[in-house]
Image 1: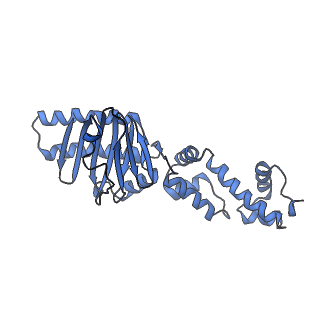
Image 2: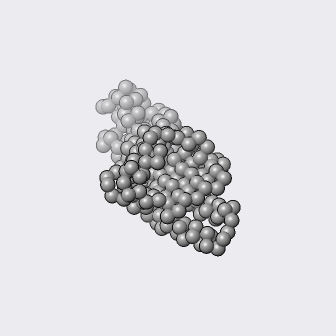
Image 3: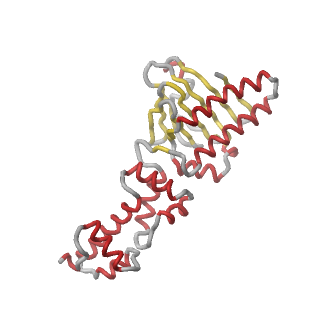
Length: 266
């Protein structure tokens, strides 16, 4: 266990035996104006509430809390809770990494990275025993935290949205609704939201239980059905919802609706 502060960075590894010990100002709603907080549960359980999102963290779970996000941390039950808490200046991240983390969401389930954090105690003790300066220790810890945040911000980081859809899934839904007159592919979404196609697919499926392209196709066919039942020509409807090839539209309509796209529903 340790606690270290240098310049605008604070990091500590603590064990709270009871909810009273875990409070330390974190149990009241608050925000940090100029720092990103990384909170990792390393044992026991704790409830983290960030804006309208919340999750009970267990060992292996992390929360990344961005500047100005109101949050509170509540220890659950009477069992001891072990945690690592790190506050980093927002300038530490850079705009690109910050935006990627925002897109990933708040909560992460990634036990392998807890092992990564566990080694920080050994790292801290080694530097102390060898008599290195606080500046050297700061640079070493900054390196470790930068590596963790890069892992989290990568396309394959397994972020988990709980309580509500992740920011990314909500944005995908809105983008699809605003562009149903265009051809949309997973690659288009990946380029739009700066994620890999596989990440987009995994996140949407995990949050909604439905593949993203199935969702978009269903939304398009709902519009098509409405227009066709109101006597629009199926060929015109196909172009209206982004199908240049009528045969592709026909197959998609039948696969979703179970009947051919007949004008006027007849």
